[in-house]
Structures are given as structure tokens and as C-alpha cells.
Length: 374
Image (cartoon, rainbow, N blue to C red):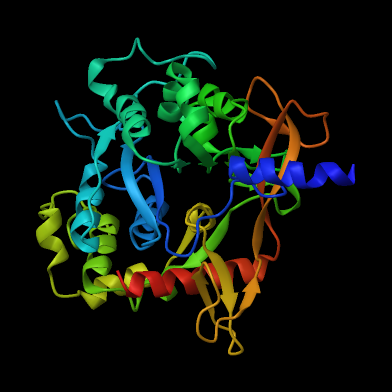
């Protein structure tokens, strides 16, 4: 057995895996090529998507290869790009970065192996872009979803071999671990078959349950004031535009004119209106997945501060582990419910919140710094 260990380790290295079977994290200066899928709308259905988009584009370790605008079903404009293009174009302006984007399939998958080919041509661009990017992008690609897995699953069903060859990880921010009382996940309800398809795909799935038993959940609450008070002017206006539904005034938007989204970014800060934004908390789910996808760790200093980086930097030398992904065998049923204690039929990496307070405090600190520099 001892003689086999070097052979096994050599095989893992060749496969790009570590001793736990995980894909190796990127080196210090390597950018992660990532395709991002988000159910972001304007006006926002859930404003946490706006925070996630800002986090993504404030993370220089990630090369955003493409963005899928998931479920643009609320957009009734003919021949529209989808309302999600409004915050996306704003973020391009704020960050100075751009990426190709496309709207995704409008209807839920009819089965676990549904390719979505019977849906309208106007909604096929998302799946087609995923496949095109995987074919032409050099090196491996990470996929990250903060909505449904609809377009990712349909693309996988059309060309599973391509996914197995080119996709190093899939981060899924959806679903529920076990049966925590009173919890539901909208992403799962909107497309159970897509969720099940990816969970059963055999790919390197990093599952980030929205809610779960025993701290197997990503959910946390952020203080919007802490995140945004020191953010750049354009970024604060980006959030005010979202929360005010484009009018600049928090509250009832009926009868108020909607401002041009890019021109709005250039406005002087309206502190009276922004104070209303600062005063609220925000339910959040996907922050840690984005950081992990980028290969970032959390480090602390002696003053109780936190920073995200791939290596210790400055006085941030003590690695903090407020969360982790654990490789687990689980059972998923035909409704997308995950049974932790039933003999498993899938094997995935599952997100675990290791320390509630440190999890919240470190993520708030990391986002504050990111938003202050965007």
C-alpha cells in the first residue's frame, strides 16, 4: 500500500486535484475564468443580487467570461435584452470591465434530462453562449449560479462531455440541506429539474445551500450601512438607483420618472436618500461562494480586522476559516429535497458555516473593503 501512495498522488496532480479530491485552487496571480448566472432584475426582485454582482466585479482574481441573465420573465418589453441588463451595464461602467451576456431560458426544464430545445429561439442565447464559451475559452472554467441552474443544466444535457472536459467546478447557490423548519428556497421551487440535473451530474459540484440544518447554509444578514457608507460614489448611486426603482427617491415610485441608469451614476450623492438605504439590513447568500471561486481565503490581523486574499498580506497573516466546503455523500429525491441521513446517491462538496459571528463579521469587512475600491 505504501508503494501506491506516490502513484495516487501523482494521478491527483495530473488531474488537477488535491488529496481531498478537490480541484486545486488557483495560484497567486492566476485569474479564474468564470461564467456567472444570475436572476437579477430591474427593479430588483431581491436586492442581494445587486450586492453579488458588485462583489463579482470587485474581485480582480475573477475573469468574468460571460453572464447569463436567468429567468427574465418579468420583462414584458418586446425584443428586450432582459431587465437584468440595466444593473449589468451600470456595473460595466463602474468597474471598467465588460463581459458578454445573454438572456436565458424562460421556462422551467420539463425533466432532468431536458435540453430546453423546445423553448423560443429568443431565449436560447444563454445556453448557446455557455457552450460557445466552454469550447473556445482556453483552460478550465468555473460556473457559478445565484439563481436557478436552468441554463447550466440545459447546456450540460446538450453536451455533457464538453462539461466534463472543461468545467473545473460548479458553484450552486440554491436548495436546502435537510429539513429546517419554516424554510423554503425559491430557486429550487422555480426549477427543481435543473437543480437535480446538476446535483446528479457527477461534476465537481460545490453546493451552497441557502438554508440548512446544523449550519449547512450560506444565509447571513448584512448591515447595509457598514457595507456602503464608504463605497465609491458611483457604487452608492448604483444601489440607490436599485432601491428607488430608478427614481432616486426611496418609497412609492408610481408617477415618478425613471432616470437614465448610466447618467444616474454620475450624480452627487443624495445623503438623505442614502441614509434610508444604510438603515436597512440585507439577507445575503452568495458572498462566500464568489470568494471561494476566486481562490480567496479570509485572513485576520491583531486588531480584529479581516481581509480576503490568496496568501497572507501585510499584517493579515492569521487564516480564518469561518466557512468551508465538505465532501459528502447525500441522498437527493425526485423533488430536489436533500436527505442528509439517508444512504447517498450523489457526492458533492457542501458549504458549512463554521462560526456564525465570524462568518458575518468577516464577510461584512471584506465587502466593505471591496466596495470602497470599486
